[in-house]
Image (cartoon, rainbow, N blue to C red; front, side, top):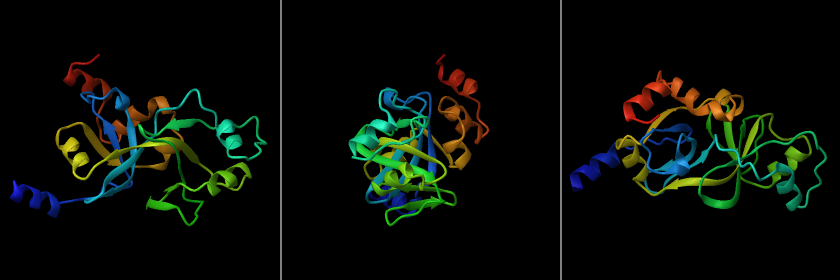
Length: 196
């Protein structure tokens, strides 16, 4: 057992800035057909990511902004809110194009960044925010070693993140499009796992 753990430690590769794609055999309906952007992943602390294809139908961007005491002046512009995952449900995460930077911005990819401060919302409302963004409530987390075990158990596929998939592809097509970046077709996957 000690040898295996040592080998896993030596071969650790961070998946920060990559996408996870849920396989049909995933045993958690919260992540069925989920595509997750991994925003942090370290050997000792585990991983955190945001589901990028689950809109929160009952939560409006305007309501969030007004609850924060801001005046929303764009009634014709109502960006979707995403359900980023089952953890930290009251916390907001903004995944965005890299044309916006602040002291709390993390960037793992050449054109994708993540900011968690309230200031970015203020800038978005003022028309000074990033060109493209996703606002997610909550996140998905894994303890150290958990995500690696799930990948080894064939629960997730991994692929490179790209801004087109995150900001331009409609939510309902992101799972299939993410699979296609690996040359995998959704119908073939479902037939292999016996799900219709």
